[in-house]
Image (cartoon, rainbow, N blue to C red; front, side):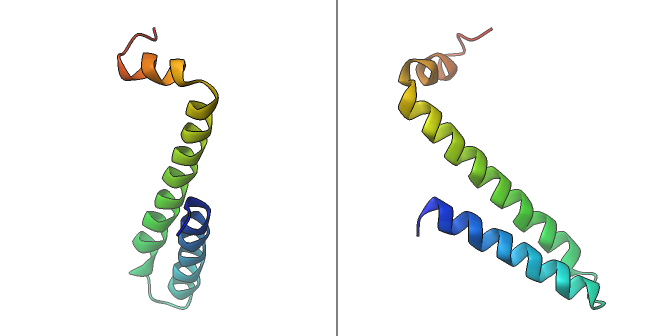
Length: 68
């Protein structure tokens, strides 16, 4: 599974959980929020990976807390 597929999967799951919660199963609200958060984190990870490919020096600085 690619990162894009994982992002898509968690977004779909979040939508499904929202729909289920709207049908009265309120216990699915936290599940939807968790799935949305996971999709957001994966999107952030993807973005950071793309940045690191373009500028590995920046990543090295971040790892060593040299950015003020």
